[in-house]
Image 1 (spheres, rainbow, N blue to C red):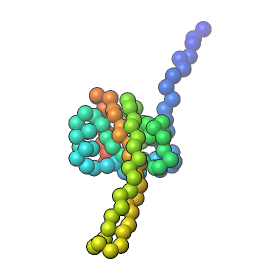
Image 2 (cartoon, one colour):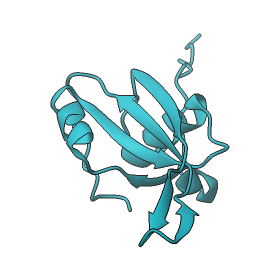
Image 3 (cartoon, rainbow, N blue to C red):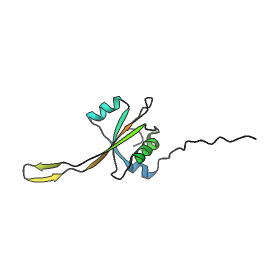
Image 4 (cartoon, helix red, strand yellow):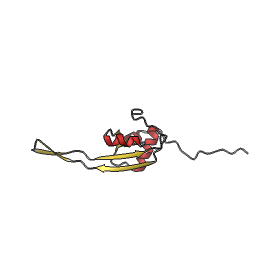
Length: 110
């Protein structure tokens, strides 16, 4: 009898909810330095977990991340001309490490 080989890996399909997890890539000096060691930084939704971010990167860009670190950056209090004060928004960032052979084109699939 011929045996069927079942693929152990399931392909993750990009759905509408996946695109809500990754808000935008972060373009900064730290992100540029991170890209030298095959990493990329994203601003993500506040309710997103590390697993959600990894799944979204794999579905949108087709690259399975090796590691995901998440940090919440609290909004700073700023004063305007010394009189009134306001608060910047609180942001959640994800720093994603990619395999050595992976290349990520951030301008694609947006």
